[in-house]
Length: 189
Ligand SMILES: CC(C)(COP(=O)(O)OP(=O)(O)OC[C@H]1O[C@@H](n2cnc3c(N)ncnc32)[C@H](O)[C@@H]1OP(=O)(O)O)[C@@H](O)C(=O)NCCC(=O)NCCS
Image (cartoon, rainbow, N blue to C red):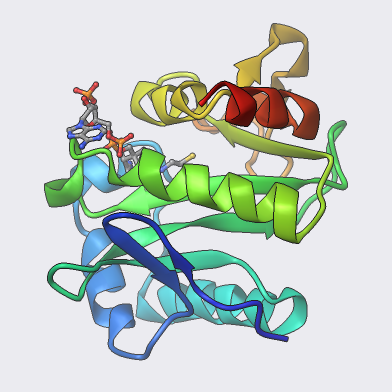
């Protein structure tokens, strides 16, 4: 299934190409990008991540889209939607997420891509709600969540079930946005 690419004013969100994988691998050695993310063991673990991303596209027609700057054709990371791959109090759910090479931070690319991904989720996929989660210290990611209209309720905070007890990245904050809120926000703009 292929539900197509997404165009925003400055970005093309598309399926991954083999050529993206090297640039994506480089992002794992950037301490800014990795500050709040669990580190993969080796290149095989990174290839496995990309394999899971591609499998998600093949199965569902959407996923973590590779983000390309239209003006340059450069791969800068990903923005997208994915089924949450573990059980928690808020699942089953579709999450929105993002990861950009740090030289491309501070330009509004994550927010621009995320708004288009929300639109895709609510209009094309017909979702009723989209969630997003991160560690409490990842304020940059929180800010993207809040800029696109997501809200946070402390009662939703949770321990990531795939991280061991005692892991400093285990505690997570959850943000949500309902279809209704998104429609109300879209009407206002
Ligand atoms: C989370 C992440 C994607 C946020 O990137 P970002 O560039 O800060 O976010 P945005 O794309 O929304 O950009 C917003 C910034 O661009 C600025 N900006 C500049 N030009 C802009 C424009 N044309 N439009 C909008 N914002 C613009 C904004 O003022 C804002 O600046 P600020 O951070 O100083 O307030 C990035 O930090 C990242 O990849 N982190 C590592 C991976 C990660 O942690 N992912 C989340 C895991 S849950």
